[in-house]
Length: 107
Length: 121
Image (cartoon, rainbow over the protein chains, first blue to last red):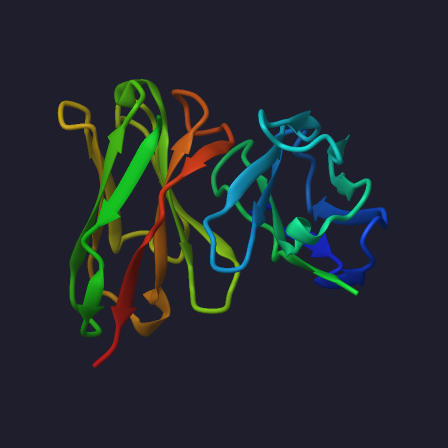
């Protein structure tokens, strides 16, 4: 099975900083990758699908890139409401594995 | 508005069974794949199972294969997860989640609020 590895597992940054989270697949998955945000105590929310397509209603400071095995989620200017755990998920075939998550905090 | 409402969670003893339900509304249920995703206390998201729009294709995580069964009743707009031989490590919030398209190999675009399953003696 394909493994999904996220890094870092946690990070702390200042408001306005550019934040980058990476997700690596153990085998190529083309662009079958999504990113989700889960705020504390809340339900996960889709941010990005097909590696780089922004879900409707998601602020444009979020962007995704990558293809094959290496992917990134970028927050161009971190805001207080972005405090959350971010997960990648591959969906090219079963199992639809999630990454371990990256917890983002404000410094 | 798309809504997914889970029910059926609760406290069950190890080795016991439970059936979760997910009532869907606001979209043409039979046209979309559906998923179950769980989250153990303080842990990350774990994909559990998916089914295609017709219910003809079903897929499971190795951790639940042979113990859990996903099914759907498109006439009732309801998704199910039958969970047998439950273990302590199955304790989690179980989320019902809508796939973006008919087949399972698409991203999840809508999540329910979840139902909590606790396996303990």
